[in-house]
Length: 538
Image (tube, rainbow, N blue to C red; front, side, top):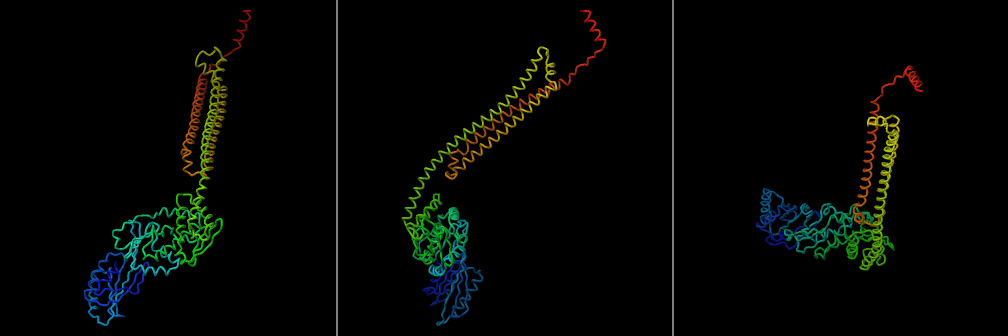
């Protein structure tokens, strides 16, 4: 412990420090030396050299008499400067007279170490009583601003104070007060969760209005001591209690704001509550029950429901939110349990209805698939039947006159017949396209119906519940694929029939065009000869 070591190095140890002052960035104290000798100079330089790697800058000034110029030594001096300052100190000690008032002053410029490997800040406290005096002089806003400036960062989950006094280890989830003698062996157990902090702040921002939220990053967990702290931390404990109470109000009341060292809040419940507190009252109000209520509200989900119940229950028992007692806790818990029972009934009804909806949707999918299949199948068989029956009718009408395949193609491939069949194929293709479009529309409507049925239950069921009941859309996706597969199957059949019919007609048409008969020459003589022959025969 630096101050105690500095007291003891002199031939006659210092009894106590005078004019001791300490803040978050600087410590300063002075003391008279009743006796000094040459060996003291070496002890002082050795002491400062032992703190050469210390994070803070330590300056000791030696005055051989009141009003004299000082000889200054620092732990950050180079070896050459140390030697020069040591020689100067020896000269001043030699020049001291019996009546001279010899004194020293120690000044420490405190620097905060960022222990990046532990996501922690480390700062030293040299005099708890001096720091306590400084903290007591701060207003509520100043106290918050100083703590935010020196001890808060988004990626930091703890702040360690190395205390240069005899004390026992005390802590909140975020702040750790460790005796400097135990610092080397101190193992920090992470109990503060940055994720939880961010989560509860998000919930608060949705449910509460805190006017100072942008400059107040704290949650109650930052300041709640796990157990009664060491007696030397009494002032720290009171300051933390004030910050704790403000944080609790911001997480429970509807509206909270800090102005002119006063915190005011408004709670809207069965009966409205509105009160303001100064820092003095905030330091001494024990809000343990409100702390328990806060933990209950912001844990295990459904915080908005719990908060609404708590706001209605609190005014029934107390006139000040900070005076919340165990009766409020019991009543709020019971009310929430009753509301859960109603919600459970609603939950069961919702799950059953959604399950029924899944069955109905599956049935609807089957109906749509059947309708699509029948529509397309009817079109396919109709055009197939038409083409085949037309060809057969035309062929059979010719009778036995067709004696070869060539004659068949020549007979079927007449331009008029091909044109009629092609027009029929075109008309049936249009009808098939209409059936195809209708099937796509029905499938899209089926998806919209399914999504709409899911949306209806989002207010009563969680997303996980909906996914579980619907098997993560397994049945819907299977039905959707079934409809698509059916449509694709009949579309392929239709294209095959269409291509086969078109190919047959094209072959017949080309064959007919390639086999043109020789023109018949009919003369008058021929006709005359036929008539003569006919007359002779008669």
